[in-house]
Image (cartoon, rainbow, N blue to C red):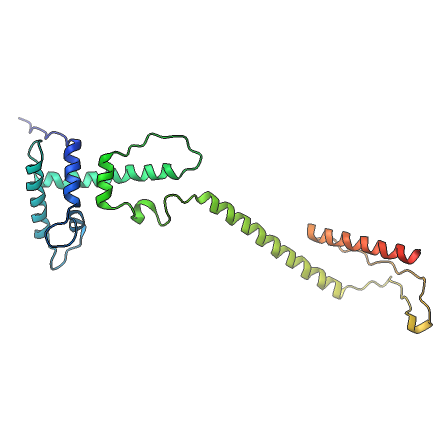
Length: 225
């Protein structure tokens, strides 16, 4: 004859188990859940944890209206609750952080809140290092804008330094010499042709050269009239 399977835990039983695991156990100063997860020490040994689960079994069956539950069954059930309800809570928090998402049907229940209140909602493995309301898309846009601005500043600096270097070493042999006032007593009417502009390396240089040509044109018109 096959062994009869124990009935499933009801919502009331699961909530009761979560409540018991969140209570402080004796004089250890921690909850039953933290005591069960705590590493073995001189004060917290395997026998202490077995006594704790025995205490959970006694208290649970004294306050439950359902069938009798063994301590081993309660321990396995609590492992299952912490795993499944943590996943449900993670999915719920992830949906809350999405911007522009339509209303969704959350699977969070009273049991989820009861379990998460025991194991903790602020753990890094649940919500991450940043807060749940943090929208990383805004940070990405800000970083992209800062990177573009930095690239533009770097390109402008490189263009300016390149233009200054080319100006200092360039020499045009076709450029005519214009005598000064101190040499012959009058200003020569000879107009020296401007240097041939160097190829532009970027839009900033093109704009700078265009302004220089406009300024040169205005100077020539003034000298002509």
